[in-house]
Image (cartoon, rainbow over all chains, first blue to last red; front, side, top):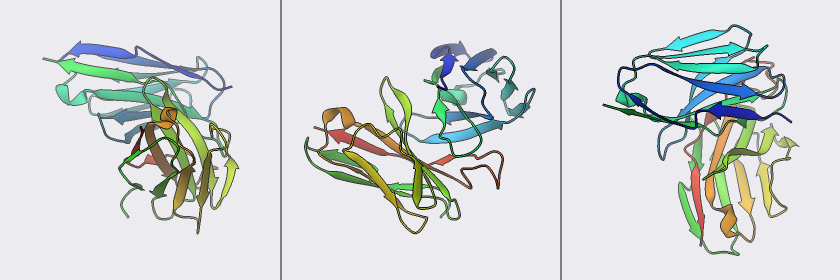
Length: 111
Length: 119
């Protein structure tokens, strides 16, 4: 059974600081996704990572994937208040399979 | 349409009533997914459609839950005899091709959700 664990589940960080969110998954997976969810809103796709060593960056967010360690990281650089949201990682396998989500990391960026 | 749409956005019902939730996927997307987001439970998969057929119904929590998809487009999730534990946000997503043949990324795009409250 494919399981996904994220940590931390809650993160309060100061503006301008850097931090990393971790996502571990239990069995071999073909795709790793990061989503952002603002309160009362739906999920917005941030990154899709396919291969070992894949790294993608968008603004202050950078995601990486290590398939051997079954680990993905979402690194936040010089956090700003607008990044406050809940971040989910999810994995699936190729073919007709649904996404399995982590429990999410609720990020609060404070001045 | 520009994105996945769902209706209603909010639904309040009494315990024991039936409800229908609707999802309109992105035009041209053949794969459609239903998920449920509950407080403390995270996001859980309910059912997946490829075209009009449902290869994976493994996430439906009980036989009170059913879903159908017609014309390879609109999908309806029906919950019969609702219970208080059914209260959650029901999210629909669509992707170009669930098998990842047309796009290896199989990126799923989510709708705004339906918030269901069972009193």
